[in-house]
Length: 283
Image (cartoon, rainbow, N blue to C red; front, side, top):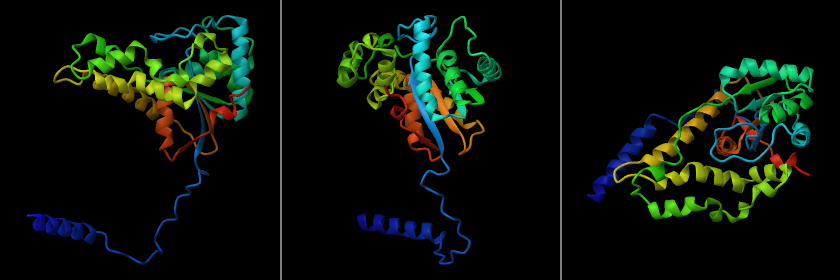
């Protein structure tokens, strides 16, 4: 029987490769693609907390209307502007692109204009774009329903002991980033949120750990995690709908969990090359 399986495998291999005969003539072969990154689009993929109103469950205390806070954000923008982006990407839906572009142009003409309820878009993205002279700003967000509390709402029969233990105190399992962020300066908060360890944690806590939750024959936790992956993949697809080329330098500003997913997507994407965030985000 083993002999017959081996013969079948070898015959299948011969048949497969018979469709691709060896051809020593290289005159019609394409030139190899440059793998050194010269045609790649440089990206500064930057994560933040939401500085204005947010529906996110975990919020960072920050008074966006305080003038000192606004100046602190502008100081960060000045550092990041050294990246010299030509395009700004923010966490807004594409349907708002026209209004965002219009408001951004107004801000460029009058940086003293005020906003009733500014977010990281108005405080950081607009100022960074103004300083660098970027002409274009786009939103790439895609809203989707997602229940990250699913494990507490079902009769979890997958791995309830570990699931409950983890979500009682998630950061205790990630000691290198287990700090009280409320005691940190804005600079230090953003440094922490853009570290690989923190970005890895955000994927784990928002998605992957949900695979430990589900009913006896169900995959409720895994399915909710898949929704969050799907949302981020759709956002990434929105990025790829934009007219970008290797002459562009793209600054992406999003909530840090999206930054984490984009980091992983871009690591394997030959279209983009991420620059080191900490080359620009430094004291």
